[in-house]
Image 1 (cartoon, rainbow, N blue to C red):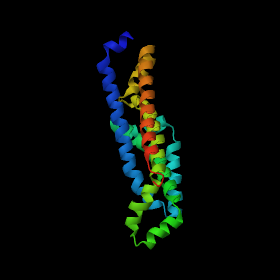
Image 2: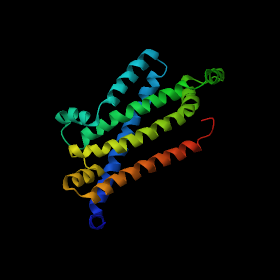
Image 3: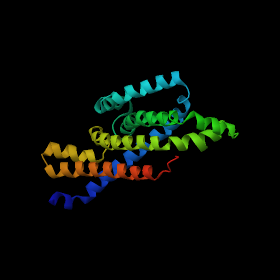
Length: 205
């Protein structure tokens, strides 16, 4: 592991860039998916159209999405961010809609009978009950984004994918192992952390 010891700064920069790209993608995806999910959850026709469109976006190959965005946004962080958000939003959207749909009608009737306004019912009853499903979706989205972010190196967005790509070009096994290993560890840590939070939720949440 001589190369690793001599290049800790390079590895650290790639790791921080990867973490930043993943975090920004997930935060932006949540900012899009949460309000959109709340809007379509109780509107069957709109829900079908939005989820269908989201599924199409999710089915596109990562490199194809990058190829479509680069001519518009150029190389670097911006197209990588938008592409990763397009992968995370469908997962989060489906999870939120499924969680809201699973709320028992009797619970909603009881909340209405208690005099709760629609907004109060949403934030005090529906969202807490849908939270486990949303966290499950966030776990899947996080692992997906961590993995897909490695491909962002192809468009000069940096991250751990840079180590993997340069390692492949140079036939440098250690670079490949370091990059792939850190991506794997990152995905596992995020999944385990979110899983721990999910398990700690009250049974009624």
